[in-house]
Amino acid sequence: MALRCQTDEPGAFEDLIAVMERPLLYYAASLTGDQDTWVRASVVLFICGATELSKHFINRSRAEVLKEVKQVQLQVLELQALLKRDESR
Image 1 (cartoon, rainbow, N blue to C red):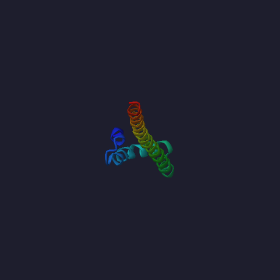
Image 2 (tube, rainbow, N blue to C red; image 1 turned 30 degrees about the vertical axis):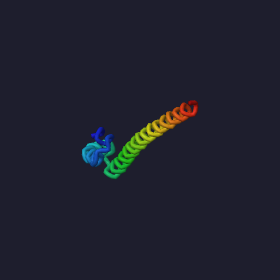
Image 3 (cartoon, helix red, strand yellow; image 1 turned 90 degrees about the vertical axis):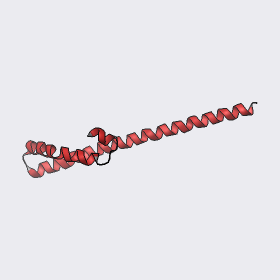
Image 4 (spheres, one colour; image 1 turned 120 degrees about the vertical axis):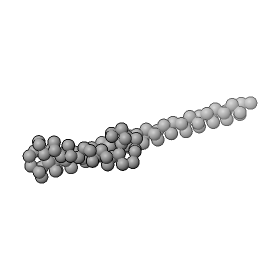
C-alpha cells in the first residue's frame, strides 16, 4: 500500500489509513489505557505520518523539476555549440 501511495494511485492514501487506523488505535489504547490520551496520540501519529508523506511528494516533485531544468540547460548548451560552429564557417 505504501508503494501505491508513492505512485500517486488515486485512493491509495485513503486505503492505507483505513487499513492502519484500527491497529494503530488498538496499539495506542494498550499503551495508555485512557481513551482520551490514545485518541490524542493517534491524531499526533497521523499528523506525523501525513507530514512525512507530504515531504516525500515534495522531494520527488523537486527532483523531477531539477531533471527538467538540467535537460533544458543541456539543450541550450547544444544550441550554443551549434551557433558557434555556424559562425566559425
